[in-house]
Image (cartoon, rainbow, N blue to C red; front, side, top):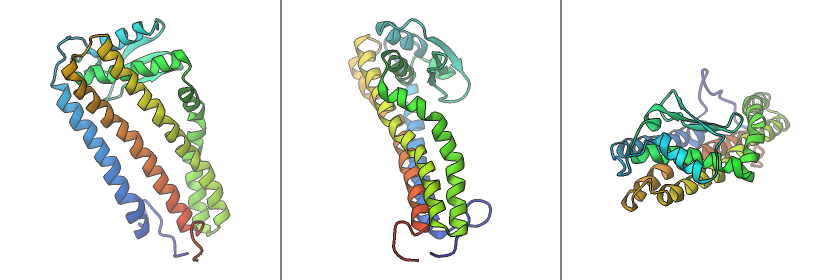
Length: 239
């Protein structure tokens, strides 16, 4: 195996740059730019129903028979999320008070997570159970792989890769959770009359762009994992 070039503050391995850094920047950066551009575009398009994001989320949950979820404002741009621990749906200011296609799309998506929770949607439950494991794998697994690579002990890298794979598992499980929440949002927004027929395209574009950020996360984690396995010699027979 060629000598290790440490990432970060010390120096960069050219293989890491080509295999992980550049693709990661392109994939994650592209997904982020797409989300921001589409959110900006459809934030300027007001729904004809005139409902705010908070109202849309409440209606979607009401239609599902959910009455024990609190809707709150959260700080930060696109900081919207549903917390199953406290049954709280938090919307960023622009989506809480906004009356745009983008605002109701994001709000309904988060309401979709609340519906998943209420109905015992299995992938959501699995994702919640994986949160502590993914956090452990992210912090410990990365450093174990790095130490193994520095020591040139492939077995240590493999142990670290096993731990780091918990992050990948969490991200893979997240995909159906996010896609399902978006599907629920698209259906409910239309059925509840929150959006008009000609506003469906905007809803799809906003939510599909957001979903790509989760796909990008999976790809980037996989590339990093493959890099360590390749550099340790576990993926090839050459030293």
